[in-house]
Image 1 (cartoon, helix red, strand yellow):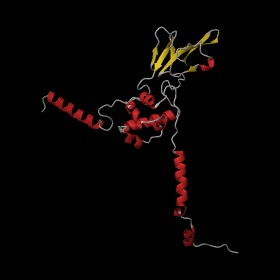
Image 2 (cartoon, helix red, strand yellow; image 1 turned 90 degrees about the horizontal axis):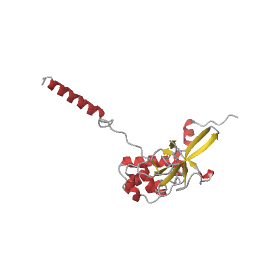
Image 3 (cartoon, one colour; image 1 turned 180 degrees about the vertical axis):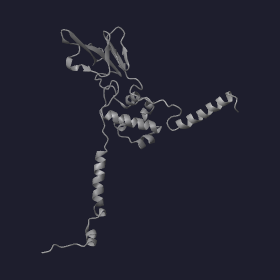
Image 4 (spheres, one colour; image 1 turned 90 degrees about the vertical axis):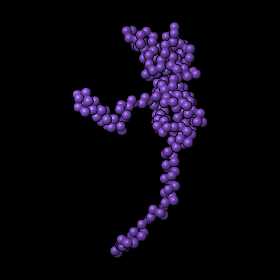
Length: 232
């Protein structure tokens, strides 16, 4: 028996249309989009326990807007439009905040982001000496509880930190590390802008105006040279 052949015109009519499945499709798409776009809210870290400290360390005067953001959850869920409604201006400040928010959620912190012991915005750093063999001694910078010596801290509670090193007998050097008078080690204090991405210095008005500014400068230099040579 010959198979039933459907004319091309009828085949088009019998094909399922997008409008027929639109409600169900749109429901699935909106559901998947909402689930995938749910922002990740990271936990605070010892150095950055709240909104105000976060805005302080990333700098660019964003700490002035700390009172406008009601909670840690709001900090990581507000959209750019919602930030604008709260009065966080200019737009580049919102973009900068959103970038740092993403970096923090990914665990990419600035100096001191791996500290475990921070009290009132201050962290103690000490020098840990380890004998690898009878002839080799290595020294590391570790974070210890406030006022506690390395010898008094259990081995499993010592936290080795990145970005800091030992210079000289017991001097700790690194970002925002200040020596403690009369004691070995250093202290790091939360400081405004300690994680800040510094803006580049604009030369001749920045990229958009560079050509225009430099052209006008060359014209002025040539004119001054002609006047100096007696050509008017």
